[in-house]
Length: 115
Length: 112
Image (cartoon, rainbow over all chains, first blue to last red; front, side):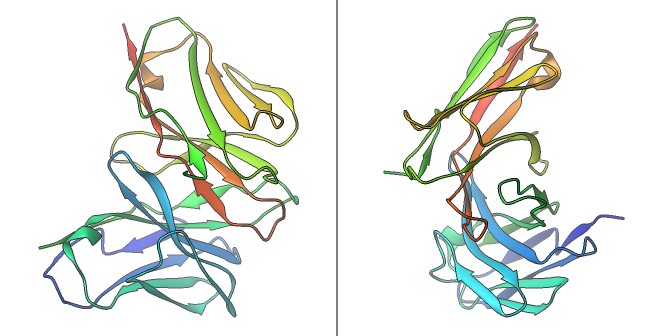
């Protein structure tokens, strides 16, 4: 079983629709992240959370919101989807073992298409 | 200026040669540096981590860090076709409370 699970794996929606992407983890990590990946642009950070009560904006948070429902769950919402939000979305978790080393564990990704 | 910059490639290297991938970063206070490998259609996976100036070796991989020049590189010796992938450089700021920012990735192709 995957340690970091994203649902759905693929989603097609229409402009203006509200959509939620979900991420759950069994690794027991406090830190969770949402990234989006576009061809040629690498991974861009949308939001991150260091614990249930901590939510932080990343590089490109406009048009997105998040909810950290529990240590194991971190959801990403698009309140009114637009075509340029078409991308591959990754959830990741981490648990820094030292002050400097922080390995990210990624889910399998959600491919979102907004028509 | 992007916080983390990489050449997008593609970088084509013959099998058995050394592949050299470079990354520069803008935040001089950055402390932790990572290289992730991503195969097409897959999730990124961590292959190297470095935080001290100099070289760090792990098998065929060597990460090099130069904080004064704000660059980090990845060398892959004896390149294999299975090394063909996109390599993502990632940087974390000055503390454990800092976010992790990725570059745009370099696509590497190893030709037989």
